[in-house]
Every structure is written in C-alpha cells, then in structure tokens.
Image 1 (cartoon, rainbow, N blue to C red):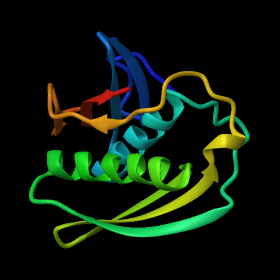
Image 2: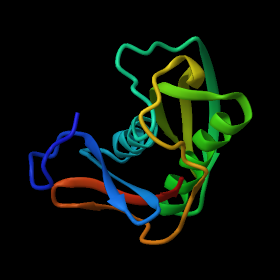
Image 3: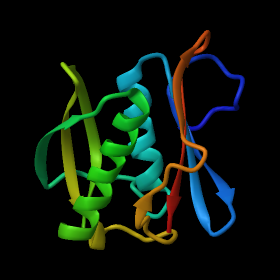
Amino acid sequence: MTRPEHAAPRGGHRGVPHTADLRVEAWAPTREECLAQAVRGLCESFLDLTGATGVRRRDVVVLADSDEDLLVALLDEVVYWLDAQDEVPVGVELTAVPGGLRAGLDMADAGSLPATGAAPKAVTLHGLSFGRGPEGWRCSVTLDV
C-alpha cells in the first residue's frame, strides 16, 4: 500500500526512479514497521507479490550500531537470500532485540513470481536516511540493480 508523502502516519512504501538505480522510500509509525515496509518496497520493486505465500521461514538476527546501519544490514540480508537461494520474503515480522532485531521472514521462491523489473544487486550508502520525525519513522535507500 502506498500513500502520498504527507499522508497520515500509516505504513507504506514506494519506489522512486533514480538514474541507473532504484530508490525505495518507506514510512510507518514504528521503527520495525518502517523497516518491514522497506523490505516490501525492495521486493515489490522487481516482483509482483500479489497472492504470494511463503513456502519456508527464515529466522535471522540482524545487528548494527545505528538505525541506518540496521536498514542496510536488513536489506543486505534480503539481497543475500535472493542471490544465494533465489528466495524473497513475502511476509516480514521484526522484533527489536539488543543491538538490532530478530527477523522472521516468510520466503517464496522468486522464480515462481512474476518479474516486473530488475532484481537489486546491492544496497548503497548514497543518500541513505532513516529516522524518526513528528509523523513517525521514514527511510530512504538506493539499490543497485
């Protein structure tokens, strides 16, 4: 679900055209939901997830020194599973833990889903932002495709 930039602080995400890359913006009332929206935005940037269901679950712990590093580490984890196992999360449950978060990822086989664009190859630090404001949490990240 996407919402205009100045909408109520419900969760959402959108892809933004960016020269030779993909930019994903996400927002939500909580840090964990904003991160989950970023994961969904990454996956929906190149696959149609309509009706997709998970066929296996991956439980991972992602640790980082800052919220921005946590965003990068989580998205790197998604890119890793895509590259190593041709899997993408179609369900995301995030729980804060000391120094990071625990991610429960319901994975689907990427090859079984309709492709809508180029798959991301890496998360970049260019223009990276993640923080809390008066309307909730927002993040912006650029992905190499």
